[in-house]
Length: 242
Image (tube, rainbow, N blue to C red; front, side, top):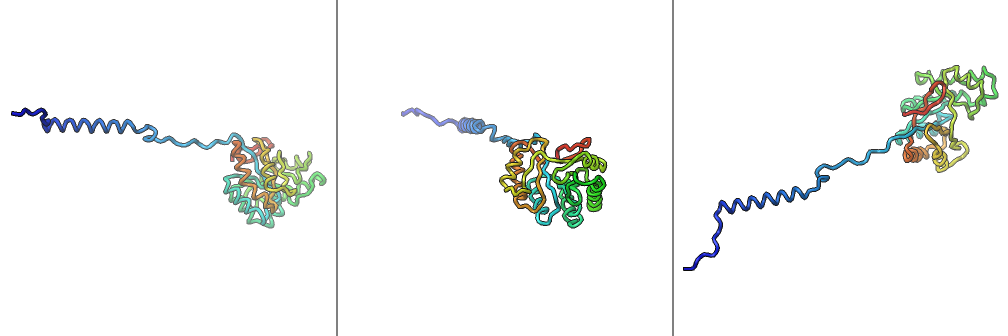
């Protein structure tokens, strides 16, 4: 008789071996999955502002540029101060209200843009106070910031403005947009801004000034700077978070 050299395992034993193999295979598969694939990590947070600068626009409101400037600033998520002439406010009240509705501060830039240092104190007072009145009539509040035309000031101008509750605001960088500067030149000028600095630009119908807005804001952000809000602190202008 021929003896059987191999005999099939019993069904129960075979099932036990198969189960053990499946469990081992599953364990190897789970262990092979990298932990970072199971719990993804968030991307890097955007850089925070390390300082603030003041963007300012003089001589408006202007039907050729005010709304364009507002649209450009809002698209860039930036705030700016508009130093308005009282006579222009009276002529374009809808633009004054548009600036206010956009959350942009409005400053006093006199009634008719004269050379204040060449005028008697009574006329200086009239130029500033009349603008205060028309702004309040249109917006419900009086400006707290004042910019003398051409940046010309003296003790009489400064004391008159202070007596009307205004802090005098000049600038640390002149964009030269009033002098025919191109968009690239305006952006280059803004690159000189440091934390706490203020740049002079104009709401004077200059397309180059409007076109410069997104580039200025982007370049500032690359240096950790953000457009802020100018406030009066003990009669002096200070740039703070918007």
